[in-house]
Image 1 (cartoon, helix red, strand yellow):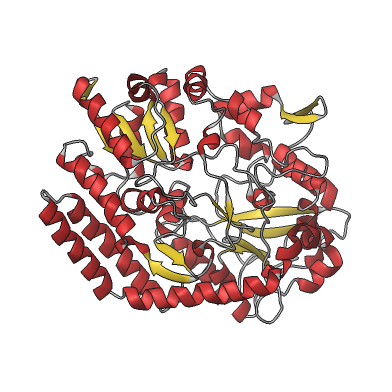
Image 2: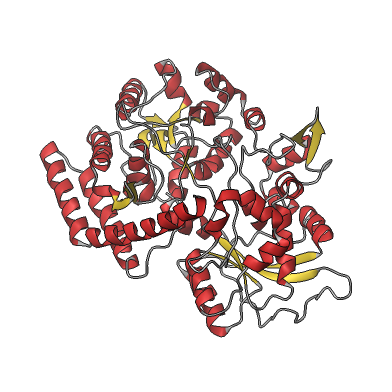
Length: 545
């Protein structure tokens, strides 16, 4: 669920809000390039760890004659959005805005960003080539292009992708390494292990199933287990959008949690756990199973490995509500639109920015920003690129090396995707199946071998190309208060449903949850989001016809 909750969480993990542009206008107190040096542009970024002075960025600077001053905005509960609004109101904004389509729309309406179609026509042949049939998606209703983003050219799951239902290795070993496919199978295995083992781990309670309070407890797993693509709180059928949490599928998932609760197998603190608290229990080896996305889980598993507790690592299974469900959850949109690049009226020589972005759409550019520099970050072995062993060791021991070397930064958004191939037949990024498999510890390789798999991505359903994900589109201003109210209402009512002590109480609490959602504007929100989706689909169908 790549929505408000997750975005807020990931951004809160970074540093505090920094100062604004400080009165800098394009060409003021910065190199104009007239003396032969690089033209320097100011650019909004969303991560305070990003810096321009890296080996890879220096190669970009040498190649393209441009450099960047990063102006990080960090969201501290809405402050990020307000900062770009302050910039706009004061007409003191950077040369480049990286933000949501909604924010860029505000800048467009204020005349603060420039149309890009003519610049792309003259300086962006590779942008046009790589977008191919999706190129017209960049255009607005009037045929103008006001922002740029990446295009996905992968047709296979990212080799480092993994399902979010997790089960501890030692639980699987005792059960004979079954491939768990349904919630009933998961419940049975957890129940058996819990009955046959001490109820504590180093003096602390063993927890058969835990999670994070909010969407990763009562939204994402419910829709994931129903085999639905990640449209946030919503489901789309026949181009009609509905707030999906009152569906039969959602009810079935809450019933699973309610069954765990009444058997004493659901974490007693699950409704108050944030990511840090849930992660602490996981790293202590106390949680037998959970629902946790890879972007959170990788950090926790690194701690488990550091402790040497390999049996406390987790298998990653796509688990459905019941048998017979088609898994369509592995959605793959054709573009990375959500945080998009726009050039403001402050920028001098905007064609130089387009030339840089166009370079990123070449194979050479892809290799530089994704792989790095040959001999330093990657080597060529038997005609194929492989991560340099020394660099890989540094990167695994200290992930910040990726940022300091320039492997991670704002230009990675223009990657063609893990699993995409370049014209030379080799992969566009170093995240290949062989690389991912080689990075596993011996215990993980042993567990995967029990299932005849090489990576956790091998369990994933075949990717389904969707025109877009709903979270990539803007919620209309008049619908936002309703959406927020329904999300808050859902979390509150879902907790009551899960804590029901009898089947009769469960049904009563469920009916009340549905009633509250409907009373607080579900129909109006459904109609509003349906219009957003259908408007986009009309544009999409026109663009790719």
